[in-house]
Image 1 (cartoon, one colour):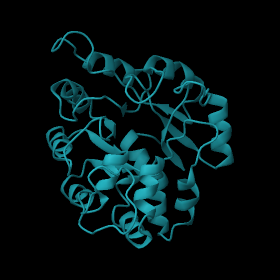
Image 2 (cartoon, one colour; image 1 turned 135 degrees about the vertical axis):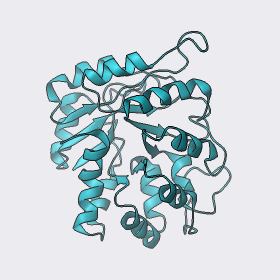
Image 3 (cartoon, one colour; image 1 turned 120 degrees about the vertical axis):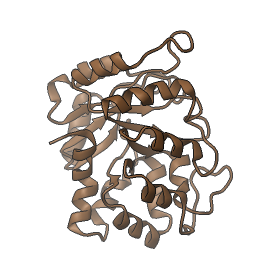
Image 4 (cartoon, rainbow, N blue to C red; image 1 turned 90 degrees about the horizontal axis):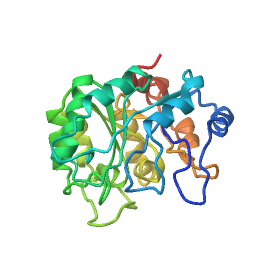
Length: 274
């Protein structure tokens, strides 16, 4: 199994977070072979940063199991003067396997963000997108995000977090981040997956788990329907943390082909692992 969304280092005040050794031991206990590790280079969601440079050093001896992503803050320098391409190109040459986590507190289609997307498009890499009420914010139905997916078509977009996953239902509450109850069919996620072959999603955190389990029959059908676009993930960042997705996906009533795609093969394809 490959977990496509974990974190290393201290990100929250008072919580030391996961070291390389604690992460590897946790992976061994849960029979997770490899993990994709997020860089955090913006201040919005968390207390501390874990930069790409730090991440490259932390994972250097364990690249057979821990695969770093790279990130930048698109607000660097004066407006219009920051070119992220050479930085991201260098990070990729040093061992990164994609871009993420995008946690920037700007509109999802902000021009500064698009400089980053353009660089990722030139490099043909993935971008892991956290979307909530402030980070990569968008209108209901994700029209701005859809335009980015359409415009930067060489990017492998990976949707994640509350305001992405609540769009699994055609009926989306105005301010609720973790909607409960039955899913109304024909939600935006089904529409977007149907239109864009470069769109993927990770099943991490409470948002992914809630979306798939709030309506068990619909969630199981969604896993089967998009078995080539969904990727197993936990968003592991603390020693003590609910990672119910591990048990859920192992026991889900899906085919062997779907299980292997969601837990390994899609990640190998999106991040160039193997």
